[in-house]
Length: 329
Length: 184
Image (spheres, each protein chain N blue to C red):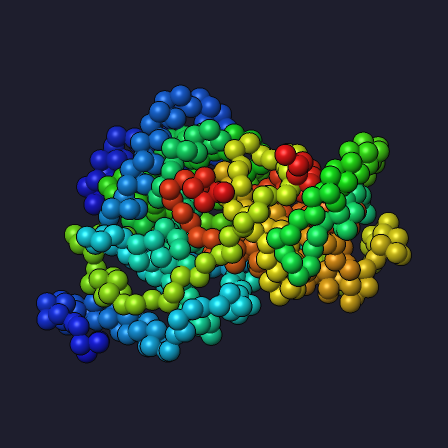
């Protein structure tokens, strides 16, 4: 490993290391052409590794006001992939993925399962599938190299084409192409969230723990209500590339207010739109949390439109102010 | 042993490796959690408690700016118990209203989304404790100032949307075979 690092250092030298930390736009544009050509293969390798490697990542997830320590274990079995995500501090909070089902075991909550090809809340889902589909709305730019978790890592920037989504910087292990560090940055290049791997272990085959887990029986899959009706709203404006991935009607958690619910995604970023009757108290027009989750509200007469998601507030504001009842066919 | 289905080879591996032993122990913890009698069908109304376990997203609230862009009369849309019902005739009426009022509302200058950011946050305003800054707060007229109860209710509603979003993301899962597959 040390030898590899030294080779990396010799090949790419000090400028490359500096580039890894560089935030200047000039640097990106100067070698944008070559960088973009080289960056996609890295991400494709990452996509493959996340699905086909047997590994364990120990990491910390840092947001502006909190730090979590996590461990992620992934294995490939003849029948499919099995993964375990554990929160190492505080109350028990585990997620276990058996193929395309994810079970959540959490303190004080009855275990439940959902249909999902990925454990949510760790890497963006697109990292492990469909990265090519992002090319329309993001540029992939190869950066320099740096050392992460004691290994040499290659920086790849996933730069949005407009100011309506966040930028991601991914440091990939040059041996395995597994992500060792993922930064989420807002359009002003402020760091919102960082996932930092402390230690990476590779295995030849799936760890026995995962094998055991895959033989267990898990709770029935909880199905989200599916809509049987036409979407009755029309978006006057959406950031490019965002499409409706799901819609339904449900009662708002906690408040029990009925809402029309629409989920949208561009493949990487996603947000939710709620349309309901205006509440007794107006919501703030705009609100951001310290980890980039934002919320925008607009009132159109007695109808209140709320959008929530990890995208810049300006995108959500534009969306909620430009939504109309769908025209009849 | 666990459900009597453990293979010797697995046991050997585990007992020979302290790391594996630790994992084995963790696994048993999970197993214990799982052995609680699970109902055949998990009801969606566990959502409340699930959400309580979701991350409490720290909210920095910005106050409202009174704004009405265009109007959709609430009675144009069928809410209530029969969710999923859609009044077609009423929907057409709503579009007409939108068309007119939208243009009428364009003159509003204070409607810029950025104005939100310039106003004083309800929570976490960096105001010195024992010292009142001249001008600060003076721009907020009396009726704009929310009563404590209203502020609380507002925060509660805002949190409900944030938490529901997090729960929905989880329930709807991450489906890799392209977003369009789950679309319609």
